[in-house]
Image (tube, rainbow, N blue to C red; front, side, top):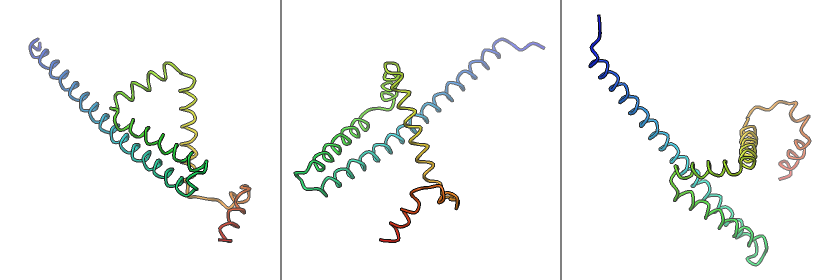
Length: 149
C-alpha cells in the first residue's frame, strides 16, 4: 500500500509548522522569564543603592565614608537604570561580545560568581553538627558576642 505524495507533503508541512510554533512558544517563554529575572535583579540593585545611600547618611556629611557611599549609591543606580532600559536580547549580545573579546576575564568572572553562589548556598544550610563548633575557630567568639549583648 502506497501513501500518496500529497499526504506526505501535507504531513511534512504540518509537522514543520508545529515545530516552528513550539520553537516560537519556547523562545517567548524564555524571553519572558529572562525579563522577569532582569526586573527582579533591577529591584535588588536598586535596594542595594538605597542601602548604600542610607549607610552614607549615618556618617558626617563631610566625611570620606559618606562621600564614598554616596558615590557607590550613584554608580549602583546608574547600573540599575542601564539594566532597566536595555532589552534582554541586547544584554545577551553584549555579554557574548564581551566574552569573545575578553575570554579569560569572562571565565574568571564566571568562576568568581560560581564560587560566590556556592558560598551563599552553603551559608544557607540549616543543619549543623556538634563537630562544626569544635573545628570552627570563630564559633566561640560569636557565641560570646551574642551572650554579651
